Image (spheres, rainbow, N blue to C red):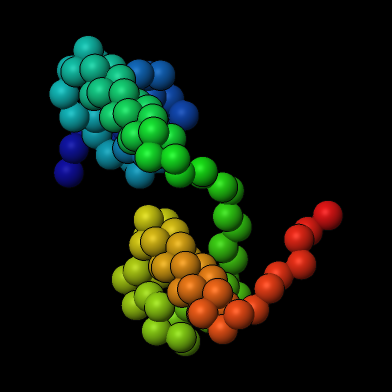
Length: 116
């Protein structure tokens, strides 16, 4: 068992730690400078992915997926139990369902009323 002073206490950690590690009570990995650089690298990668999506013409919409929607997706077989815990898998499944529904509507000749 580590000494009491070695334990990371949430809220008392230095501000340059990655927040998810701090919330889990994990000990920080690497030097403070390495942690800062890792956080900057992750932010740069996130910005790069966002710019790639925008370059492809994709529009990023905030989509609220609550427990009811997740349960319906599970029941329909759109995701599995593991997929229900991943934001990325939930988003991909929701996009796939939307594309399938729109494809079926277009193939069936259905027209939607524009929202006002």
